[in-house]
Image (cartoon, rainbow, N blue to C red; front, side):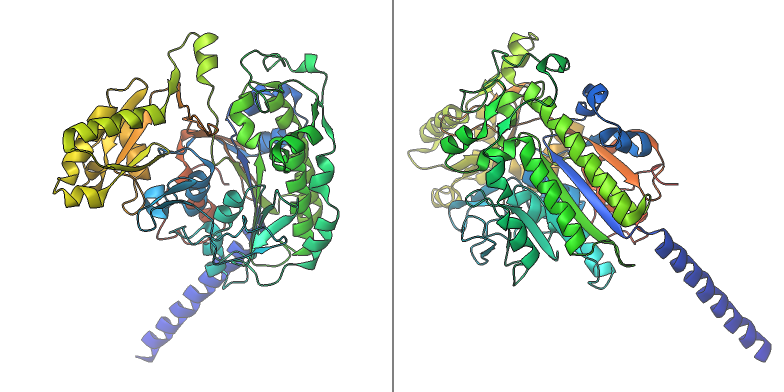
Length: 544
């Protein structure tokens, strides 16, 4: 009996010793700092296209010494920055995390709401009420939230961006801070959702007034324009440019500021990325990121042309110059991390929350491809007439936005009309329009209908509480064209995804990777249990 008890106790000691050794080894290999680089509107082919013009310490360093996923995709219907960012950082799709677009129609309040605006909280860093934000609409936890839980709130989680949506949705709920640019003052700001008192070091940073100083500059090309052989001519006739007026270098930024009546155009220039990088470096220093055994996370979001992306296009000199200068910003960031955290001691991942498509005009006129513009207002007007003829006069459509149509449920119920039937008729009517690839009544998605692989984006996007009654997809090469608002559209779901640094094996992963795979893969690299909520899978072959 005593002998058996001794053996049992010996086994317990042995098991505890093994687990202790394993935990010690995991802690030793776990990087103290993870830096996520998100480049908005980034096509995967930009790196190879501009390769010969890049320097050695930026994009080239990440590609040559990192693990490159060549076929990473965001498979969702609405390809915009907010749903893309939420998908990347939660490891779930819009159907779960709830950020179905940058904004959507709220049936309860009968209005359109922004995905991060929240009047319950106030802006810290300026008097602007436009920046009152929170992550309350995000219905899933982020990798930052999971880190905070895993390290008993000791991990520090921050994000920096030009736009509030990218900053908030990458930071998540439990972050120490999310910071972005207030275009009315030029200050870097945050929300009281994240902190009660604005840090003094940021007040000091803002006193330098860097954003407004940049808007006094002239944007000229980094290289002679004759060397931008990877792009179309600077005066390419189909390039709309700023306000459909200015489309050739150099650009006088004070003129753009005067026209916009704010510093918003800064987001479309390389200087906006410089501001974000400088703020990120200051944040690492002031908040002492990566200085203890608890892994910290910093997300840095760069913007490539921001909302002017479609005004210049993927093959413009403006886009190439933006990336040549961004290459230098990334090089500066990597050198700083090598010095402060130590070469090989930190983990980098680079990706994008949304990619970019070529304009229908370019595809049709220069490549003779089938392409065109779909006008939602005209199509919805005809659909309203059809529904009036079919069901009688009434406000049958409450809202149409971002490939979604919201029907008037109260009116439908009052008239004792079957919701499925009116959804079917409306979807079938839309399917007859040129440029519409397919329109789906959402009762099919709600009831779990059987679809082929092409319908994955519909399934991933549909959220019962927030989505419309009809979702539709445009044909390849077609864009929506609005009468009174700027078109911000892409159908390209192919995004870059690169891992670099601690325990990363250089090479290329050629298998298909989903944006939802980022979170579980980061957890495995960090020796953390996989979150229960994630819909993604581990990316194989990127670690030693």
